[in-house]
Image (tube, rainbow, N blue to C red; front, side, top):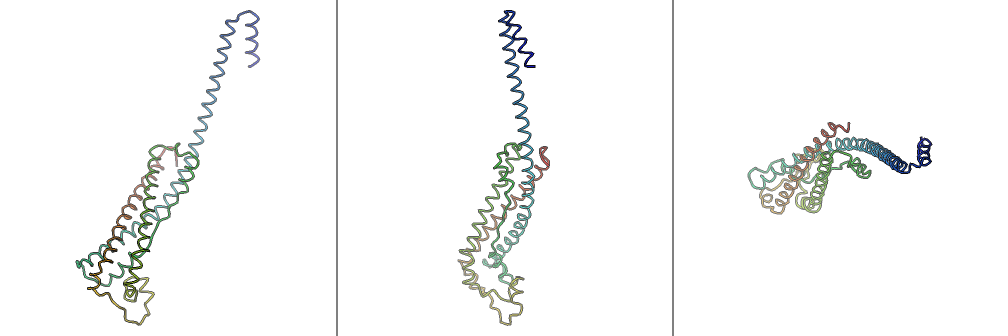
Length: 254
């Protein structure tokens, strides 16, 4: 082909048709440029196709990560739901709206429990490091960002709650209410531990309890913390389910 074009150019020059030669040469250059542009376009199309396919694989990993997260999030939602109920019951007992009973110590123990989630971000980290997140639909990108931002808020809130337990609630509880750890406690782990203990368990003095303003304030603090976490878990669960549906229905993936 190259030899063919060279022959045409030579014939035009030999015939003294310089003007036609220049027009022909210009046309030939334009053909070459067009060919290069087409080749670049095809190369870019192939590259975009490969990047999109790779991004889809990362999305599958993210979807699997989210399914694993949901196991933890659902557990934490149920746990905080129960703990929130117990904090409310304990508050009502402080306010003398309900009498102190055998469950009081169980409520107190539940507020001692430190819990936290450990989300799997491997898929997100991989797609961010690859720079291929931009090849995912914008609405999916926005949902991913919203979901993982919510997880960051959860981790921050869990850290606040657990730090409060370790620094304030737990030390106060063991300094003032360690005597409640006995066979009468209506909480299975402790009751089982002390099931053969022949000693007479010491009970909470109602008057001292309802006048314990520092502890009442700590219970309120725990109630507020649990309430915040409970709402965040619910939000994360909803976002996770919505994102899974979006990924599964997206034409690019799965």
